[in-house]
Image 1 (cartoon, one colour):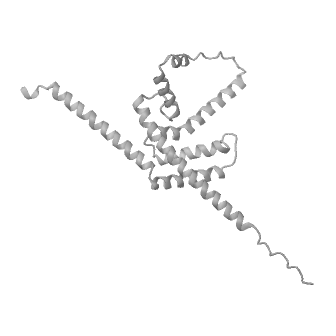
Image 2 (tube, helix red, strand yellow):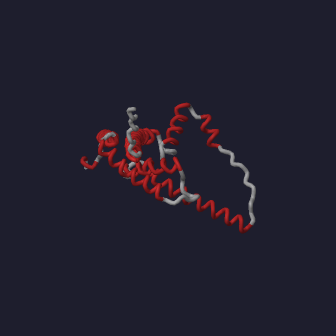
Image 3 (cartoon, rainbow, N blue to C red):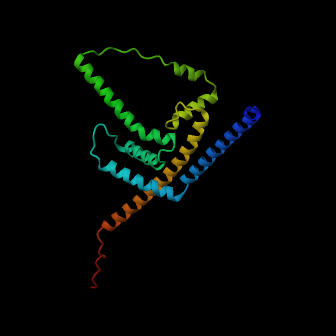
Length: 213
């Protein structure tokens, strides 16, 4: 009978030990993730995925639904970064699913416009009064900064502070690697372009010598 009685002190100690172990595992995973983004191998992997994404952007035929110009390059670079992260983080999964969400929203909006055109029901909608804006103004300064940080990191808009900080740290390390990789690619492309333009110039003939009288 005595063996069946649980000791609350022992249970509390075991729970505390489990929490510490879980916290140390999370910190170790974060350190490994940050070190991975700083490695040359990860930068080469991302550079190859970025070149593939950019080649698909340049080969796609221009359409009204596809983004153009710098926006298309930025989206391709972010998708390649999320693919390099392998969906292990919230921000990478949010980037990979954002394109599908935008596509579904646009299809839903187009269906609504088509139904309104058929039925002729173009009712005027009253502007919605945003209660969240009033709440955000009355929040303390720290909570307002946390909300802003949650909006900046993809997929962290409604997450608690520990998750936001963890995702933001990994996201910043990934963005730093993205900047290094894109800078290297831009230097390589500009160097190859200058070399090709220099080789395309025709060889200049020496000026004619003046005849001696």
